[in-house]
Structures are given as structure tokens and as C-alpha cells.
Image (tube, rainbow, N blue to C red; front, side, top):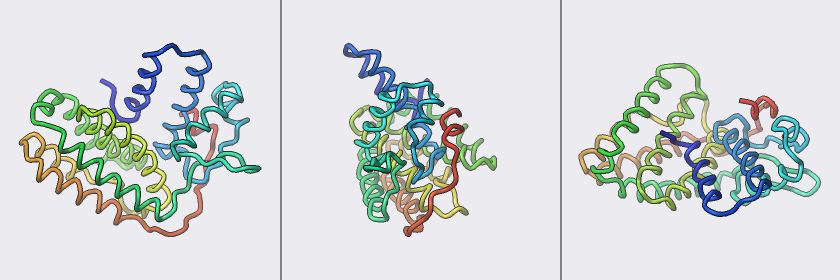
Length: 245
């Protein structure tokens, strides 16, 4: 079963599949997905210059298609495009960081409130598989894997809540949150806490929405509290390697 970032991307493809699409649209979607995933998974940090020639070479793509994909990412505020400087991965300001976490609290509250015990029973295997992957990741030392799995938890809840609009909004907020974490989070803390995730799951299984909401809000407030909201220089990167993973 598909989940997380892959499911967000596949939902876009399914919508395209519901109407007649051109070969160009499919190719632009492929490029968009590759860049979106690399940014979401911290392989392209904030401030990274997205050099069109390197994207064309790495993804074996047409320059016009690359430009179209970058424009789509810019509309979602994941990429910024400036005259004479080209495209780069967005660098959210401290105010944007606070605004995004405020939006996440509202959206994730609504998502949690939408998940019934019946949904949890229907999705039992999926939830159990994710929590198992999460525990394995947190037991290891691969920070990228930890960040990925802990972020997937939030996307999973969005996917199973039954409201595709909430899920889509959360998908964009999570990518922008990834940029914020890469730019502002202290290096000595993980991006999420797995035990808090388990508390939310248990509360939802028991139909205790009040507790699930309280834990989720406290969890998001803790994540925001881990941010050092000041200026930060972009990390070193390798664009070709990031898009090849």
C-alpha cells in the first residue's frame, strides 16, 4: 500500500489520469515529483540553486519541461524564482515558519478529529506497518531515515482521514515544514518523537478524540519549540546526487 510522500504524488497523478493529459503534462509531472520528493526528504536544502542544465542532464529532461515544473513548485511556495538568479529551494523566514506551524495545528486537529475507531480498524495493518518502520528508524542513527519516517506519520493520518482536501493541504505544509526543519532545527534533536505518535494512535483507536487532539497540538508545539528562528546559511549539496537517489 502506498503511503506518505509517494501517496501525495500519486494522488496528483491519479487526478491527471481522470482527464486527458498530454505527454508534456506527464513529463512535467515526473520532473515535479522528483524535485518535490528530493526537497521533502532534505536531499535539497533551503537556498539550493536549482540549475536547469543540471536538472535536464540528471533527469534526462527537456528544458521547457523543467521550467514548467519549477513554475509549479514556485506556485506552492516550495521554490522561489528570481529574475537574473533563476530558481532555488525556498528559504522560509522565521515568520513563515511560525505561520506554517500555526496552519499545521489547525489542519492536523481537523484530520485527527476526522479519524474514527472504524477507520483505525480498517487501516490497522497500514498503521502497524508504519509504526514498525518508525521504531526501526529511531533505533538507528540515520537521521535522514528518522526524519522521513517520522514525517510520514503525519502524512499517513492525512491519507486515512477520508478528506482529500485536508490531506492535500497537509502535504504542502509538510514539504514547507521540511524546509523549516532543515533551516532552523537544532542538530541535537529529532524532528518528531515516536512515543507521542503512539499516544495519538492509541487515543484514536479508543475513540478518544479529545486526547488525540491534545497530544497532537502539544507535539506540534514541541516541534516548533525546537526551532532556532534566526538566519541560517544553506548547507552544502550535490544537485545531481540528490535527484539520483
